[in-house]
Length: 112
Image (spheres, rainbow, N blue to C red):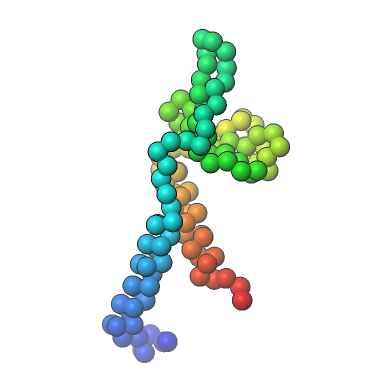
């Protein structure tokens, strides 16, 4: 359809499809209230806990001392030093948005 052929109804239909697509992606995202597991490290009196929120062979999403981090580690695809990298709130929101957006893009542009 060219710009000259577009009507208000076409624009509304396209907008509705985009909203439904975004709503579907948002509905697929879940918020956990407890971590998958908690690891205790260090020695008394310097013990600390690390909460594991996501984990696979590539990396982990963790919280430690009130901060969010990405952790690679030995044997993982992302094996870097230091053991984890802290991420601030704005970065977290941008990363989540980028991941969902990129995923939606791939779905809409799948190779046939």
